[in-house]
Amino acid sequence: MIAITIEEENINSKINDCFGKSEYFIIIDSKNKNYKFFRNPGSEEVNFSGIEAAKFLINKGVKTVFSNNFGIKVKKIFDRNKVQLVLLSDRFTHLSTIPSIKEILQNSSEHTPN
Image 1 (cartoon, rainbow, N blue to C red):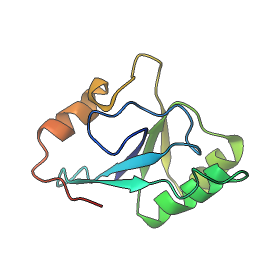
Image 2 (cartoon, helix red, strand yellow; image 1 turned 120 degrees about the horizontal axis):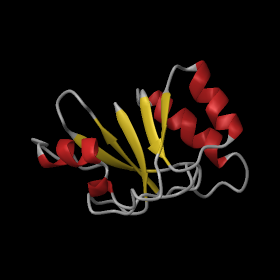
Image 3 (spheres, rainbow, N blue to C red; image 1 turned 60 degrees about the horizontal axis):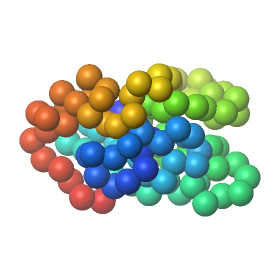
């Protein structure tokens, strides 16, 4: 399972720059190519937003997370749970600009609504 921080609940969404404050996640099952959108339960937290978001994704079975920025506490939580973090460069502004994700979304057999 792959998660990506996004601003809107659609496949044309921009990538959100901050893991903990991201409004939404898209979680993609890399085996069957299905995906779902989820509101980030940590997005409105004043403190510990990243920790809440990390726990949420771990509970969903996510093993890889794409974002532009992760806090040190979040990195430690993901490290302990063997979740790979992928830092996106500034050139990846939308979901469709990440080559491996674009291919998954184009070949997706089904979008499962939240």
